[in-house]
Image: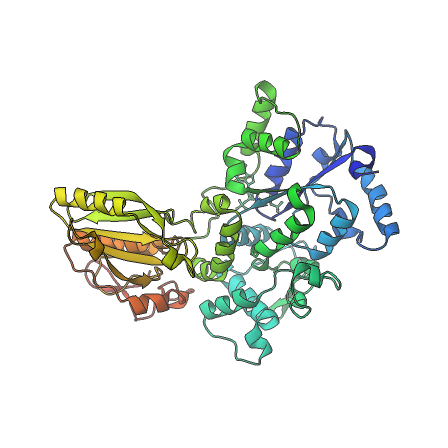
Length: 509
Ligand SMILES: Nc1ncnc2c1ncn2[C@@H]1O[C@H](COP(=O)(O)OS(=O)(=O)O)[C@@H](OP(=O)(O)O)[C@H]1O
């Protein structure tokens, strides 16, 4: 019998879909040092718990364990079915059947993950009569799914409100009310979601495999959901609550960067003796990172595109919550990781000398803005001294990952108390002032990364000897406003805040 009755153990990569589960499954097999005759080498995804309802009676559970036995060999049952993670049915089934299973989860930036899921469906449909796949652009797929989620999940829709015209508002409302998974009756309370909310995502499989979408009157079997699966924090919490210390959460980037280290970590997690990877085993581990399909440059969602802006809004709060749980993983996601929030970045002397120093927690701010920091007195002094040596005043941009920025200026080396806080600003767009096309483009390219655009523009302003002229209110408003970021979907930017090229002409980027 599977699980520990006959000492057969279970290790399952349960998700997240499109977050490198294939790679992690391959590393797991090597970490376990299983012979290549093991059935898991032939079949990565058993889909066992999707096809068998194992959450019911004692008889079902026993029956499921017997069925599972056919996949176990050499003391291990190994599965790599990425759909398990986001399916509350399976959460129950798996817990009933294999309560001692070791679960491995790999995470990825939700925006990249959604894009990868869409890109996969460009290849072709799973429905034989419709070989063409999802022919929608990613922008269109995003907008349509947001509209659909808004109708099904948002409190505003339930209250009879009109659907917001702007995608950024849709995204905010969906993010505020989405409940992350469809739950079977009975599991609702355990998952901490409401009965009503449990229907929000409808049935997981129907949504993923056969989203009932009509384009030009035709049925589109490959037009799937790409966005809802990016909400992982609550699901992670539910899996961890049930399986306790038997859950290993990894980031895709970390697995890719060092497969031998990942294999060692997996062995430690499973309580297996340490292995020095060398010779054939090291070569095999290194080879799988190269063997699997990896597209570091191709197929990436364009930074500062319309969908990038909208999805950054959709997932911002989700990513912030996830960061509280697994900070090291989220820190490796370039889209969300402005400079470390414990770092003062962008200290700039007018002479163009930069200084980066450490910060200390600011208890005043941290009550409502987790992660906020302020400069330490020592850091301030160092900056001042540096700037004074260059005969300049000193401007610092302090910011955290969540687009909360603090502009601080030091005018005098002796009066560090006189730090002037210009205000807490969002960083989606930096406004007033004339910037050249190159400056604009550089800033726009960095918008998605958060506050980098602001520090860039501060540097640009200083370089030109201009006064800082930041419209704090406008910035804050625009933080929620991807549609006016010059990131419009398939049309030119609106006149407001329009972009001028080097010769002062309006341009359409
Ligand atoms: N070795 C290696 N290095 C880096 N990245 C890798 C590697 N192997 C797989 N990948 C990327 O992982 C994405 C596929 O994830 P999954 O295997 O979970 O996909 S699936 O859910 O099983 O379909 C997929 O992402 P996209 O390329 O963006 O589609 C793969 O490129």
